[in-house]
Image: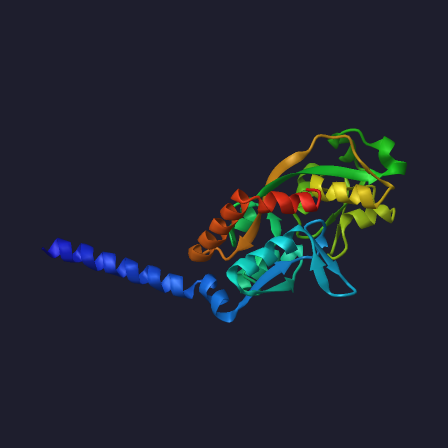
Length: 256
């Protein structure tokens, strides 16, 4: 009988703990406040682009997060952030979800991830006048090559690992590596195949270096690590929307 009482007490304690966690979840805070705060960098088109004239945003992430807020019957509030503080913003509660971010073990130490809904690879790019200099990843990893990357991005760590012999220029967002290359201060930058394709169509002087894509990386949204109620909700929403074709249609809209 005593053992049964112990089991019952443990079961009741577990139920109470789960009820408390549910009540404290971001999910219920958002539903109560009527506002979903989402962090976005505004410098990663076609995922997120900030219009400096209107201070508004557009892109794949913006459509996805707006749809999430719509389905929750709340307003969306986009909170400006940058790559080097993206995780810190989630941890500090500045926002409760982000736009697309590469899934990294380092980031997962502090923040949680939603289920992934897309994957990308990393490619290298240069300008037309430098295109003949590069025909392999090794040709970039040379002492006389200047490689530009943006602080806090996945590509910063990639550049450090892949090009130890090259001259790395690390710049602060909202500046980007491709801008350094277009300005002639560096010769090479790396980014996802998705953003690279968009940049090639926008800047005729850019060229893709003929190398295989590296570092296949799933994309997902960052969320508070310990809030399993909120993580479950977001994951269920993603799976429902994937089944209904929303993610495929939105990706197609932006040429992804």
